[in-house]
Amino acid sequence: MNILIKNGTILPMNVADDMPKYFKGNLGIEGNKISFVSAEQSDVDNFRAKHHENCKIIDASGCIVMPGLINTHTHIAMTLLRGISDDVPLMEWLNDHIWPIEAHMGYNEILIGAKLGALEMLKGGTTTFVDMYPYEEAVAEASEEAGIRAIVSPCAMDFRMPHFEEDWRAVQKRFSNSKLVSMMIGVHAIYTCSPDNMKHAMELSEQLSTGIHIHHSETQDEEKTVRERYNANPTEHLVNVGLIKRPTLAAHCVYMSDNDIKTFAENNVSVAYNPQSNMKLASGIAPIAKMLDSGVNVSIGTDGASSNNDLDMWDEMRTASLLQKVNSMNPCVLTAYQVLQMATVNGAKAIGREGELGILQEGALADVILVNFEKPHLYPHTNLISELVYSCHASDVETVIVDGNIVVENRKCTTMDETKVCTDAQNTIDRLLNQ
Ligand SMILES: [Zn+2]
Image (cartoon, rainbow, N blue to C red):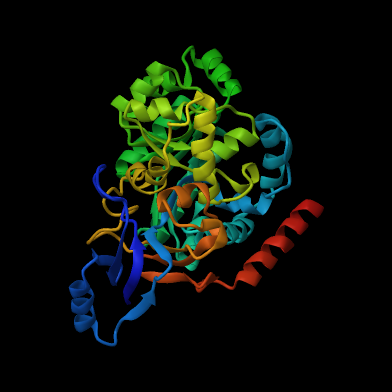
């Protein structure tokens, strides 16, 4: 489909530091790519002349037109487990609450949870996410149906390695030609994956020419366990095993020394910062301001909905900034625009899709969202960047386009029956909790 988005306020996320960040303008989409982004009426006229009737026109008056958000660390099927266990520490949360119920979750339960997660994300303007979970084949299936871009990470873990093999093969077989689904290799964490299994995952990521997605240095307990087991801290262990030489996306990274940060910068490791999950599980505060100063690419993730408890990237962006400010007692760190970069361009870089995603420019993939600014909590309009990060909600997202397809229009999902997705999730969790 060809789409002309007219009269919007365009926030392309690719302007030089000293230039205005947004302008009144228009955007054209041909097929699954952006064909122009411009303030010139002549570009609109040319686009209309070229496509005549074969063109959907969206009036974006009163809306910000910006790249879809990129959530670089989540477990979307865990939306099914939202609220089942709160207010306990990470290891107790995993051992006593999450893992026992996950043991009863197979392909279908994960498919149902993933559909709910995909629906929530699309309606909030997230167009790409990086996932890690068992049965990533089901997450991939849900994503194709929803029309959201997914990077699924079948996950190496000592106690489920046979399943890992099966899962990545299934994803590879079924989705290798997908326009929306691609794969990273997951390594759950150092404390759940032996060096031998890690090396196996690394070899596989090399064969498949893809990156590694890992939980890293999330808690003090993890740091202690890794030190006792390997006589090294988690980052030193990644270096010793050699994993750091693969393109790596490391989630959390709460306990990072200055040396660890230097190692990440030197090895181009990207970080997924998950402030709300780290706060809720009282894991700690990642030294993000230091990482950014050292040149580490930092993106934003929500983590799973059962440790957050939502997949709302607007809320996450706001928390990302506020937490770093109070932690450093410095209101200047993590500016609103920096946070927007983390949720768009930095996210794209973290998944090796720089220039293709997280940006509005000619030739980029058409993942575009319209945010309605005609709302009381967004008035008066003085600084739209500030309003996006500090005042906006997921429910302000009006229209969502992924890969050139309109998947949310006037706040309604066009690809899935929203009522059925919610009802299926309710029935499934009721059954899991009552067995
Ligand atoms: Zn996680």
